[in-house]
Length: 121
Image (cartoon, rainbow, N blue to C red):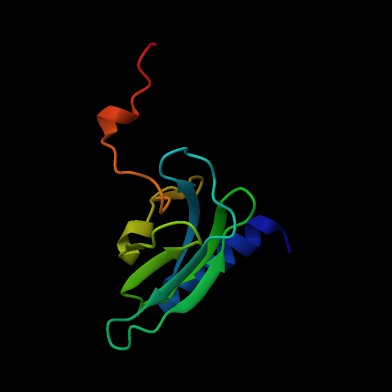
């Protein structure tokens, strides 16, 4: 079976079951550097118990299957503040692009987008 066939078969399965397949890229919010080893999990409002979806690779990428009963998606990594989003935030209408999630280092001080601009020195 060819890889494209696998992707098409997986997409059909997810369409039938109500699950969603998302390509996620986790980045450091201040440096833009990919974050490897970030844990991605989901929880439902009923139990609040986290269930693992996967971990990012060395490039900050992960492919996750989001169950239809997922209410909250959370990204965690030691040294970073947890990030929680709704499953809708992982939806993308383009299969060739990852959804970017940016996590903030714990020791970082809050700055505005204005402060992040690279002004000429």
